[in-house]
Structures are given as structure tokens and as C-alpha cells.
Amino acid sequence: MSDTYHHGNLRQALIEAGIRIINEQGEEQLSLRKVAAACEVSHAAPYAHFKDKEELLAAMQNSVNEQFTAQLQRAIASATSAEQKILAMGRAYISFFCHKPDYFTFLFGKQKLVAHLTMDEEHEEDYPPFKLLKEVFRQYLAESGAALPPAEQEVGLIKIWSSVHGMAALACMTGVETTIDWEQIQLQ
Amino acid sequence: MSDTYHHGNLRQALIEAGIRIINEQGEEQLSLRKVAAACEVSHAAPYAHFKDKEELLAAMQNSVNEQFTAQLQRAIASATSAEQKILAMGRAYISFFCHKPDYFTFLFGKQKLVAHLTMDEEHEEDYPPFKLLKEVFRQYLAESGAALPPAEQEVGLIKIWSSVHGMAALACMTGVETTIDWEQIQLQ
DNA sequence: AGTTAATCTTTACGCTGTCAAGATATAAGC
DNA sequence: GCTTATATCTTGACAGCGTAAAGATTAACT
Image (cartoon, rainbow over all chains, first blue to last red; front, side):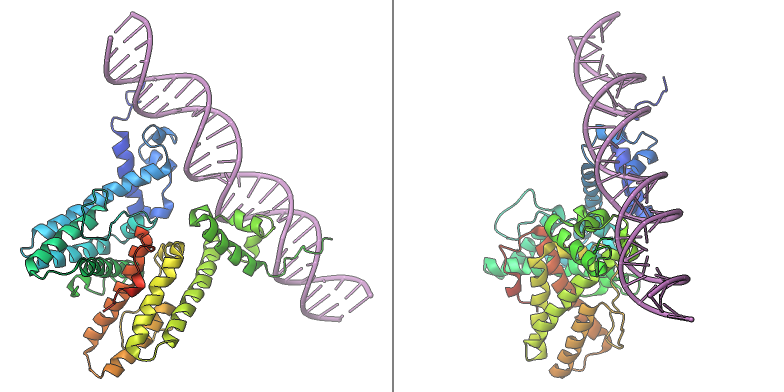
């Protein structure tokens, strides 16, 4: 009878409503029923699009990860040398979470990252931001000319990601992102 | 009537049962009612000792943090020079979470760390592991003799903590703690 | 037009955190 | 020693949660 029995694009609306709730009320306040209500839909409607609450959360994380990856890509594109690309990417990585600290816990809170910490192969299923770093680091190795043994290459890769991710974590956990200019801290 | 109407030390028992549940079933499976049941006590009994679920969680985190800090202190005590103390502490930091990855999310999942990232003052309320690092880093600066300007000291402090914490995060998130010997990776 | 599949609603269930009221054990005061 | 008070624990209740089943509504296809 009603002209809006079908929502039209409920799946996407649920994802966006969920992200909005996280930004406005925090992740702890997020519930399937609230997300459904925000879309003006019954509390069981989401089950037509997601088998689980977990599956909705995964879709939301995918969406946020796309924003994150896009920001990293823009930073890389804006730099010329491979070394500058790495530094720009690190700054963008930290900057992203300084502006949205809630996203840090949301993306990394329940561990599930796939990342082969080796330089030898390509792994399609690797976490996209990590794949980006690996690409740029490969360029850096080629550009610098030094033929490092594989073990040292992997250590270098881990060191860069660790310090960048660690700085983002510290900024978000300590809440001092406003008093310290993290992006200005030299990475190497 | 019953000889065990009063538990004796329910508060501590609840804390330990909660930590046990996290280790055996994961943090997501933890509920106040399960913790109470594990202590063979009614579901509302915890409210005589904790105003909230959050307050019980905070007490559990305190307990885990004490184990963590104790391990760091042992590592520091086992080294001679300040430089070795820093390296030993970093390895212990990473080692702690490699052996208990669930503790990483549990301790750092909901951001709340207090840490004044400056070298000039003492702050009693700072996160204990951070206070330890600050102490040892101060020793290191004195030992190395180089009189760095305060800004560079603080950057050094942040860099060390970031890379160590970041490595622990990566180890826990990627689940490769078994294939990579994180403790062997040189920190500096 | 009639069938099928996708989408959404309604209803129901068990689990959760929390509160209020009452029961019971310990401690304190006389 | 008895009473009183306080801390501790139980019972019962409530709203909110995730989820499943059954039915209603719409869209798509033949």
C-alpha cells in the first residue's frame, strides 16, 4: 500500500547510517536496531542485506577503508621521489586518524588484518593500505639503488609501518593530536 | 544459613574470573552475568563491588597492566646500560602482547591512555609503562652525554614508543607473531 | 496474468546491563 | 549478649539487544 515499502537502496543507506552513528555517538552506541531506525525501517530489515551484525560492520569497515586508502593514494600521487612518497604516505596515515580518532579503534580494534610481511611476492588479499606501502617501498628500494638482502628489506618494511601506525595509535590513544603536530615528526 | 553467603573476597574473584574468560573465550564473550556465574554468585552480586560493567573492566585492565608493567620492569632490571635497558624494554613490550594478543585490544581498544609526551616534568597520572620508558630514556640521555634540545628529546621519546607499540600492534593484528621473531628486530 | 524471488514487517525468544526491594551475614555500640 | 547498623548477596523486574520464523508487500520474469 505505502509507496515506500521498498527502500530503494537500503544496503548502502544502512552502511552510511552506521558510520554516521559511530561518528556522532561512538562505536559503543551502535546497534543494529538503531541503524535500522535511522533508515526508518523495521529492526529486522537489515537481515535482507546482511546475515549478521558482524557483516554490516565489515561492510562499514570496507567503506571507511576505502576513504582511508584514497587519502593515502592522494598523498602518494602528490609526491615525486619514492622517498617523498613514503614520507607523504606516513603523514597522511597519521593525519587520517588524527582527524577521526574513532576510526582507529573501529578499523583496528578487532584484529583481522591480512598482511604478508615479505617483499618477495604479491598478495592480492593483503590489507590495501599495506599493499600501497609495499609498492612505494619497492620503488624506494629500486630508486636508492642499494641491493639489500630480502631479510633487511622486510625489516625495513616492518619498521616503517610500525612507526607510522604506532604514531597514529599514540595520537589517538593519548588524545594529544591537537597539541603535537604529528605530521611534522620525521619518520626516518 | 549457608556458610558461604558471603564470598569472602568476591571483588578479586570477579576480576580474576573476568580475565580468565577473556583468555579462554575472548573479550566479546565476556558479560557481567557470566563473570558472576563463574564465581557462583547471583547476577546482581557484582554491583556490591562495582558500580558498572565499565568499572569492573577498568579493574581488570588495572590488573593486566600490573602484570605488563612488572614484565617491563624485569626486563629493565636485567640490563646494565641505559641503551640496553631501552632495547630490553622494547622487546619485553612486544613479547608481552605476542604471547597474549587478546590483551592488546583489551588494554588499548578503548582509548584512554594518559601520557604527557614531554620530558620536562613528572606526571604521576601518566600510564605506568610510559613512565617507565620516560625514566629509562632520561637515563639514556644522561648516559649518552649529548645535550639535546627539549623538542628533540620529545621526538626521540615518541619515536621509540611509537615503533615499539606499532610493532606490537602489527604482530597482534596480522597474527604473524609466530613466524617473525619480533624481539630480534633492532629497534633503532 | 500468474509465479517467483526479493524485500520488509511482525512477533517472539533468550541474553544482556541495570535497578529496586528484600534477605542474610558481619561489625559496632551499648 | 543483645540490638542495631552496614555491607553483602538474592530475587524479580525492565528495557534494549541480536536473531530467527512466519507472514505481508512489492518487483521481476515468463
